[in-house]
Length: 210
Length: 210
Image 1: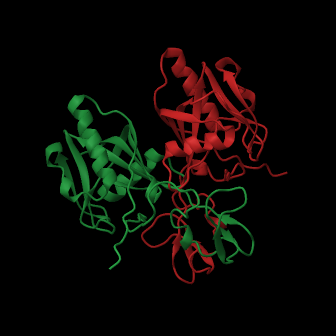
Image 2: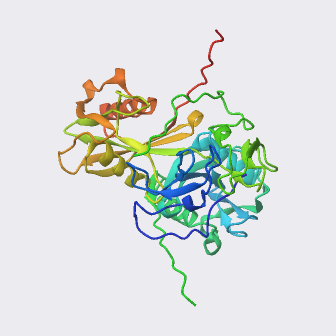
């Protein structure tokens, strides 16, 4: 049920090891002892970390996995319209943060149940898409409905099966969904879907000084 | 350079949503305000989370990605002998935690440089292996050496190219490495390596009451 995607993330483009990627600056206090953190490069490391000024422990922050399903049914694709932020009102494949204690496939099945009240069987991993700038990796599985029932879960206002020609490209929630759907349609044109690994290089967008 | 794999993790087998998976119980203080956390299931969620008793914010914990390379050179595989804990003295493919700001492939290249001083070119993703119990997902890429130079980095005591028949199976550092190498050898027997998605189901091992 959690949804903590940061659409308002702003960071520099390109890779620079010493910069504090992610939300490290927001890790103000030590989760182990409650002491105040400083933000420095620890000895023997190359990245800025949150280091406790009292107990010395480091709180690491790593990329998160977003797991979801591309559900094929009668040559159509199941999509959900989001009724939560970010991307309120826009369309997505059912997907969300993977949890500790589950596999990526189990997480994708769970998210599909939560967002579309749909029971699915996962076929294979279709796409892994890294988004380095925001520290996310999408893993989208091909899946089939176990039965033809689905309806909006608490995070969705609508769930709908779309013909490939009718996918709402102008109102997709995330760039990862655009890339996933394009890869899928390209695969379908020439045969069967196959696994894709790719990187979505979002770029830093500076605010103009007004 | 970070290495925070938890070999001593103990948790229940199987999936139980309400249990505090991972190290949530160690998240004692709020990273945003420093207040003491409680560990409860928040309204609208299904898992125990660390919730601040002062500001109410939740600190989420999610699975981590471990990225690495299976480096083929003259029909041999490059492996590193660990000179750090856990699994001190045991052999591994170069791998480590993915960082925010890099793709999985970039992380695998970086870890190979750090652990084996080897410059590699990534060919394709070979294996994704989820380990739900410890909240880790391994992503191992097939890679080639850009030049024939390698030597132990600070986390390795030795680096060595092994013939497939000579892989040190009795002293491998991690179950993920055993699974990866077995998949690779099976593929090589019948043709070319292909992508594999799989789950390593570690089980809870209870301590006997003495």
